Length: 382
View 1 (cartoon, helix red, strand yellow):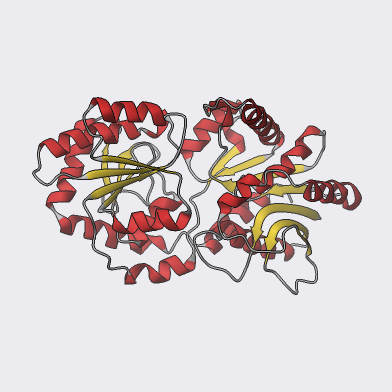
View 2 (cartoon, helix red, strand yellow):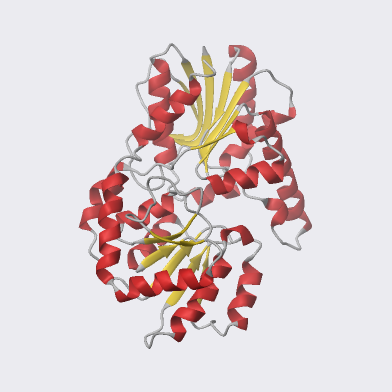
């Protein structure tokens, strides 16, 4: 059986926070090869050498460390025609679009044509919703509409869509009218180097809470801002909230901040490169994700940086995030969230205890673990 993989990276000798998808892909292909699968790979960049049975097409000659650069590339005609030729000539049975959504949007062009190929998407965090982004530029609106339309076609044609959290499962299912039984949720991967170095981080924490994610209403950042007002009214030494991310709900969050008189204590940093997000997590005394209670990469990185997590308790809360590994609050209760923040401020040892317990489970979510889970999914298509 022949399988075509496409993605930004396909790496096996790098191990940092940028490359977990690429290394997961490498591990997955290695497992499939043992089952008689012949892999064809189109990668933005690859560091793989000496794999005799792997047909690899490298589009770029240089390793681009910042994934945000790929977002300016969007489509690569060379990669598209290579994919089209391989599918037709080699009689590909499965097409797998793995990893981030930037350069790989090239391959959404394939969704224009009807095909009987089984399609797998992911693992990924989910689609950017360009139709929700506010802009006055007509060219940008046209491009976003095209990107969204092509991505939606790819998702609709896919047999399996693998996402990293149930929050995005709800978004994809509702906004794109995709049956939920087509969407599989896996916990994200954390690189081995981050696990190895997690015990060495001893930076002093500052008095700010970090929140990271796309600024949409469903992420519930407005609740965190409202809880900050309650917290600061009860303490002498005020704390700050640092919000990292962009999205269509940003202006509304700015309005809420101004209305509550918290402009001095809420900082919107916009979208940041992964290394800058990492630095902010190191300094924060807590990470609060008021809209998600499923493990995500930012949560794992916070734990590795000795930063405790505050999240809502819901039916998404699983065996990783529980009362021993995170502070849980009632999803719709601003008072409960503010009480949990105050509890963490008053008891420094509580935060340390939560981190210690969470780190015991952190080693489970390795690249190899994720590859094994995807391999089990693949057995349905082989």
